[in-house]
Length: 88
Image (tube, rainbow, N blue to C red; front, side, top):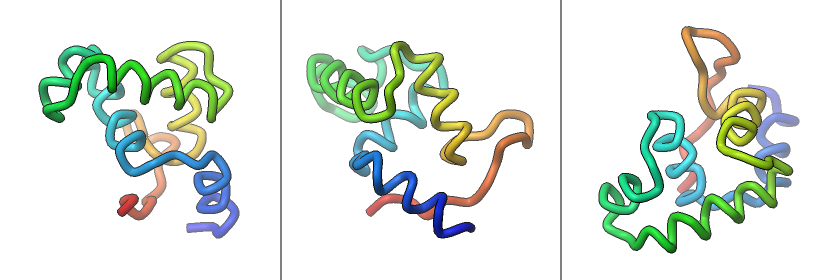
């Protein structure tokens, strides 16, 4: 992986929990479903998603997922993929 890509993630300041939530959003889960899966409140998920919108400059879930694809966090059908280390 290119160091610039890692720095790009670091510069966004996303937490490990936020990266985990991006994966679940990409799986198509609603905030309520994410809350149940992670055993946290829906309000907490709402706050994480809102914070991710701000940090990434995204205005909605589609834009957030596009950001995640552009930064190699998620991929679709083998495109826009790279291996990023899991956030600890």
